[in-house]
Amino acid sequence: MSNKFYITTPIYYVNAQPHIGHTYTTIAADVLARYHRLLGDKTFFLTGTDEHGAKIEEKAKAANQDPRVFVDEISALFKSAWKEMNIGNDNFIRTTNTAHIKAVQKAVQFMYDQGDIYLGKYEGLYCRGCEQYLHNKDLVDGKCPDHKTVPEKMAEESYMFKLSKYQDELLERIKSDDLKIRPVERKNEVVGFYEKAGLEDVSFSRKNVKWGIPLPWDETHTIYVWADAFLNYLTGLGWDGSVPLSADMVKDFWPADIHLMSKDILRVHATIWPAMLLSLGLPLPKQLYIHGYFLTDGQKMSKSLGNVIAPEDLIKKYGADATRYLLMSATGFGSDGDISWKWFDEKYNADLANGLGNLVARVSNLIEKNNLSININSSREDLRSKFSELMQALKIDEALKIIWDEFRRADEVLTREQPWKLTDIEQIKNILEPIARDIVVSAELLSVVMPTTADKINKIFTAPAIKKGDSLFPRI
Ligand code: MSP
Figure 1 (cartoon, rainbow, N blue to C red):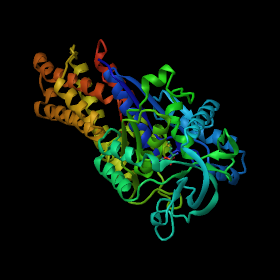
Figure 2: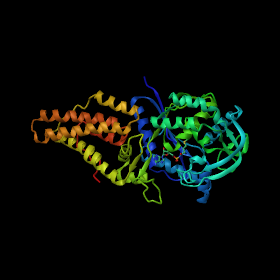
Figure 3: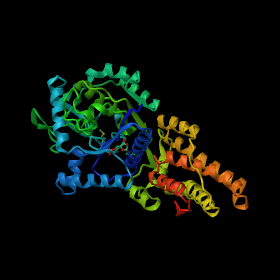
Figure 4: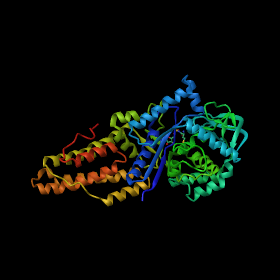
């Protein structure tokens, strides 16, 4: 029986163009979506852009642009970056879409009518980089540890969301894995936060931010940008803000199976977002999965350090498929990683140019030379089930490793048997046929990460007369 699978990425801020971190999350989500499609699951993959709030308002102003024009431009850059990277998302949600705006207004009105939103005052610190309220204890040397900036002091009338009301229920749901947070260290951090700090009511509206969605009952306030943003996970399916869920798409796909993200935004996803869903009476997502955080050459990537690796530079150098492979194998999926051009070049040459590319060329060349006809059908249930086990556990990098073990084994057989020295056609075929089969099965699995390459390999080996194709990965 086929299942449904709904996966999301965070919607990215449009204050700057896409970088490698966004690219990593988006490729990973694409890989998981492709894997579920391969299984025959009814799959929906959502990504998009987060376009309101103080940070973007300020950026547009600095660029001397109308915010509308500014967000249109940058959102389009994300869209085209994903196209270049061969990302097969089913929808691209923008929080400035009219339908999203209307749904958000309807949802917060419902929460207000429930008594979960009340007029109060927020006095405290705010980091624009995070678009989050901070406490003194969050700061390092008086600064936001993520953005290294001094947060602004705020004291203004604000509509507050009764987050504290949901403390006990959410803690219970997280502890019991009803709302699963993985890797488990991340779950433990969240549980620790609930147990030590606990949930306080949170400011849900801003009087001084104009670039946002007005509250339907008091248009002098705009909705807190995170509340607006979270609801994308529902509006991206076509939700119009009504509860209970009515539209088919929403009923079919909600709750999300995986919200993918990095640790920078875990806490809000594990507190405010599920509390909003409880307030709306809607099911919680099944899992928050927190992948690793990337550094370049041991340092945070930043323009001033000059160590930014841009996704388009990777594509220019290696092509989209190889970029997808390199990023997915750069680090254990849940662990932080360090990347550098040197590492990318070495990995590309070892695994792709000398590895897979060379293997496919050698085998297809020998088959062509000896004019062999090959039956490429094979099941390799062992390989498929090992691969599936790892993909189900979101161990993408390890799933890739077992495919490469196959390629290495094939290389070893060739080196040992040296079919190019043989003359007996049967003998040559007995060596090459199983290798060709293994390559084809491996390529089918690899298609989730390298769809174009997998397609090329499949075409080479299923052609009526096999011919050595063009080199898949020219050496760098
Ligand atoms: N707009 C919010 C998310 C709202 S979701 C309802 C936001 N946007 S963001 O543009 O800052 O994207 C953050 C996400 O980008 C991270 O959680 C992660 O998925 C990805 N990455 C950004 N930098 C990264 C690294 N250096 N390394 C790995 N991924 C990182 O937060």
